[in-house]
Image 1 (tube, helix red, strand yellow):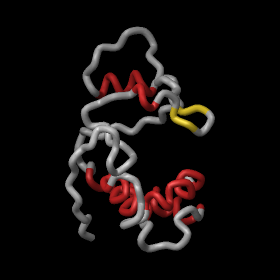
Image 2 (cartoon, helix red, strand yellow):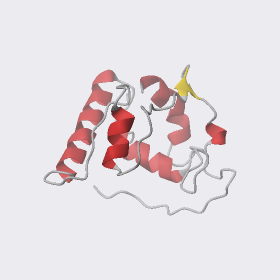
Image 3 (cartoon, one colour):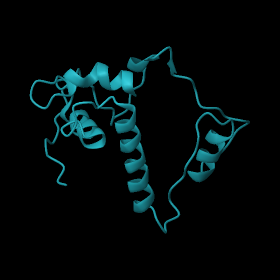
Length: 134
């Protein structure tokens, strides 16, 4: 995450950043980019992760619609498919799309909700630009 934050910092700047406003808002909210000068510091990233994890656990407290999996475990995709009520064939494994610090074949992945990283993006999507209230 440290390497990613450093590479993305300039693109996440509120006014001059070139990333999509939804990505800028999400990263700023999750990693407190507007409240720290060292968003790549190990202690800061750990604090952000633990805070986010606790927020998720609090939100789902007392509910049965949260699944926690470790995608590196062989049975994790089976566990996810079971949770989703999907049919399971054989011993499914998660595909490896992220090797060598790059997401392989990113352009091949299409979905109606996929957000381009760039604010204009090839799909020229419209978006809602709003601020998260704290």
